[in-house]
Length: 181
Image (cartoon, rainbow, N blue to C red):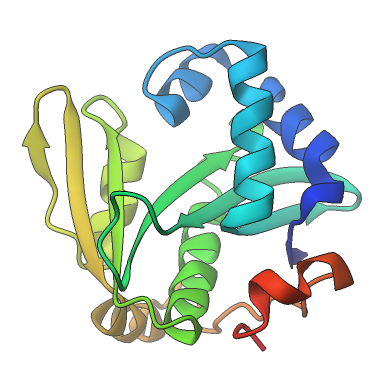
């Protein structure tokens, strides 16, 4: 089940990130980070970004995020993904990216920026699947997904024809996600 995550989901989000295998955690954050840094990141994400979680039962197994503001140009959003190590290569990244494309479209975001370590082949392949042209810069690979083009490619994806509908946000998220009906 997909749903928007809010501040009350911080414990689930933290547990999910700590359950990642070492290499997967490193790929997600392009290195290692301290627990205090991670706690601040989770709080900031759940309060300021669009965050969609994939649950199996009551266990959070994957998260996709769209971050705007700061140094990110208007109408662009930077994405972030984490999929539990045992759930990788099962289509969750595709499902979550489709949900992010839909959320981006509903929130006047025209471009999703994908930035990942050069060794994260799975993320680069996922971004390319939805139209990103990945470029190598320093030790990072950076790509941009045009949301309209990504939605067209998503509609043609045979493996997952339907666009995941993310249930309406919890009441605490109403202000953040009001445009995402």
